[in-house]
Amino acid sequence: MKKISFFLFCLLLASFVHAQQAKYVFFFIGDGMGVNQVQGTELYLGELDGKIAIAPLDFTEFPYATTSSTYSATNGVTDSAAGGTALATGKKTMNGVIGMEKDQQTPVASIAMRAKEKGFRVGVATSVSVDHATPAAFYAHNPSRKNYYQIGKDLFLAGFDFYAGSDFLDPDNQGKSESLYSLAQKNGYTLARGYDDFVSKSDKADKLILFQTEEASKVHRDAIPYAIDRKEGDLALSDITGAAIRFLSKDLSKGFFLMVEGGKIDWACHSNDAATAFREVMDLNESVRQALQFYEEHPDETLIVISADHETGGLVLGTGEYALNLQALQYQRVSETGFTSILNGLRRQTGNRVAWEQVEEALKANFGFWNEVKLTEAQEKRLRDVFDRTFTGESVEMEKSEYAQDEPLAAEAVRVLNEIALIGWVSGGHSAGYVPVFAIGAGADLFQGRMDNIEIPARIAEAAGYVAE
Image (tube, rainbow, N blue to C red):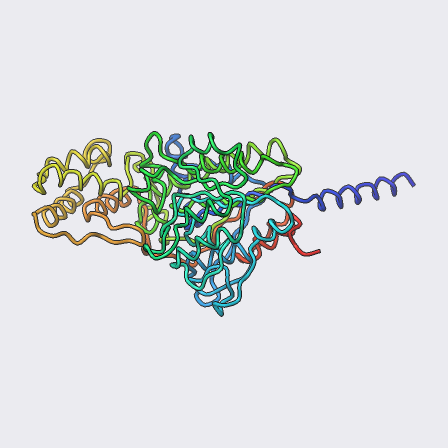
């Protein structure tokens, strides 16, 4: 009799544990972060420790890990709009569409909207503009991801408690409509510019939008700086995440849902810039640590899920030599775009009469070439040939990727360093490769077995009780 009672007790206990809902949900999305972006970062960190082994990121040690497919309703290779919509709503749509069915007319509610309906506090945050495809999929409905002004207006209709990113891309509809900043005030939002401004305003704000400083937006309004290019005073994704947690925690009794996007992993991979991409993955990990600190205080009520909307670039770890030399990437000190700015500065300083010796010094300082990183004669010739072709005073055709137009010499320097690191890239676009899924906390056991991207929000909704009763 006692044995039967103990067995029933165990069943009841197991039932209670499984039924424990997640009151606090963190959903991290590494845009463009495929399995090799994660594995490459860990192998890179391992080499920096002097080992042929991985140095685990915090989120890769979560107890539940699997992979997800990412195809859209209309394409074998998704874009961020369809990928973001799948992760936000559990519905596949056509590429380019935000928060709608593939008919481009029927709106679909996101898990963030469901959380809001259930009385949870809600935040959407990103390292790129707040109206970019992935964050927009959580609050907007639009047939085109490029309708930035209309997407920005949907932000107010959703009425979430906290938004963060670099800025709005098109705040006044190209001068034809009322400013989104004005609409923010009318809709009860406090606008904070930079982390210090957030700290001074957050306590008194009912709803808040956090952007980088106006000075930073005058330089690049489309994103905060890459981690590798970050300078003191720049807004970081970890700042944004910490601010979101602080703001949403003003009333913990309600619980919250927070989506955080590491948006520039994708941008670096579009440029095939491995050193910058790995540092962006590390930067996302720093933001996850903020969530882990919260989880440690509320372990029975917190769920953290990490995934990606798609893989970018077709990253290859190893180019045929049965070896890697990822430690060489540590000597790259700026992104490809950052080095473009350095070369542009040299052009301005010299009236576009830049000498090879000046470029050589810049390559030494920012890529370690000839010093820490030895070049073959062929590699040096490639750099010199690009210099001779593009620094002759004639017009230069910039090398274009999805989100950048860079100096050909900057792109070639990155290609040479990738070659030395024994890293390859298939394209400058997206691929259909699997993306990782990691989970810890209340309901994390739901994230097992091979998944499709539309299952991720469904399982988050089940774990947190966002589903209809």
